[in-house]
Length: 548
Image (cartoon, rainbow, N blue to C red; front, side):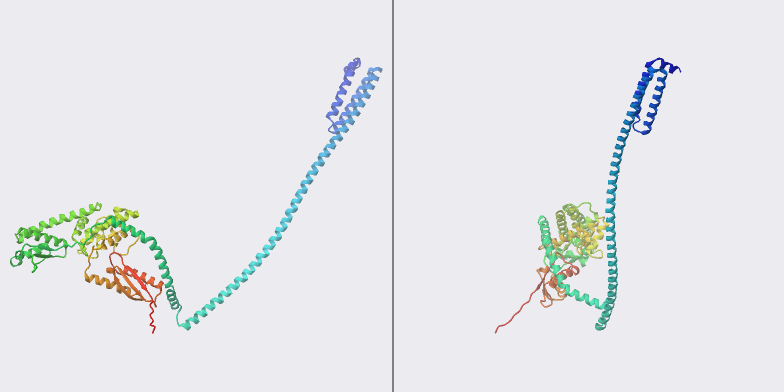
């Protein structure tokens, strides 16, 4: 009641209420335009407001009635406008929502349509792939079936072929009377005979190719090495004769009942030959060192004039010491000349003893020094160790100073001596293999063998006896004549070349080349010789007719 009293007594309060309702209604309409429930709530609020105004107007009297009626009408009109506006907003909102909804629906329908089209295409592709796969599967099945048929046919033919081969083999064995192994051997012999011409052609081809590249290079190396070391190479001969002033001295050398000569021969280990040759006494002995001791001792005795057993023993002992020192000095000089150091004392002594040894009249020590220089020069030109090559060359014939004391040839003896003296493997093998079949694992052996052949084959370096020369010629010709197709063989150039006359009927060019190669290999395997032997096979046909 206090509120109503204040409203009634104060007309401004009524206008304030009206203004408040006028303000609230549009706000309510604006705020609740988005939903129908909000609009209904606004209408109810307006009606209540109008009733409230009506009640207030009744209480305020007649003046208030007219004013409240006007206000009520105005409120009613405003509410109707608000409702209409709300309806319009609602319809507009609904239209917007409907338009947006329709657009979304249309977009989704488009997407669905595209997906359906994609699925249709994939389905068509899968169907086509399925068709292709079925076609491939059928094709594979057909191929497998055909392959199985062909495999079965091949197996059948293979069995038939095996059966036929066995029948043919049995028939051939029955006809020929040969077993399978004998027939194979006969076939191989026939094939080998047919391929001889091809083998000869291959030999000619490879020899030509190798000779073009190797011959010139080897000649350059050897000639350069021999020119750089051009030592004296005339033959040296160690004499065993002693000159005497007169023939009366011969009796004194013999002594009473031969006691002087017997004492001398016992002390020196040599034989003294006194014959009718004027002015000469001959000393004979197998050991060149002993022979040299005897020669110098006899010369000293003749010079001294006092010839008796005691004096002989003294002079021989003194000469032995001198020769021993001379041998050591010669060994040291040879090692220093080729710049080889660190040699064992036994090796130096044997090296000096080579001064008294000759091989085919060639001094062995000078030959060893020459081989050392040639080996070193060739090693430098092909990129090997020149010092090691000179060491191998110097010691390759070391056993020639002792080979009469031990069993075996000088290569084997020299290798044993050098091995016991602590020399390395290359030096030992150079001494062992410089006359035998050479191997490429030891290049220094090849160098020493080459230098040894060069030194021995220098003009005038060596002399052979007539018997040995004739024997060598006969050996060369005999080996060559043993080959089929060879009519005649002639050794020329002092045994350094062999001319072979081949039959024109039994050979052709290719087989002649093979014969030439086989003869050269036979020489390498069966003979020992310095240098090299050139084999030339001549094959020609001659036809002669007489015109009458």
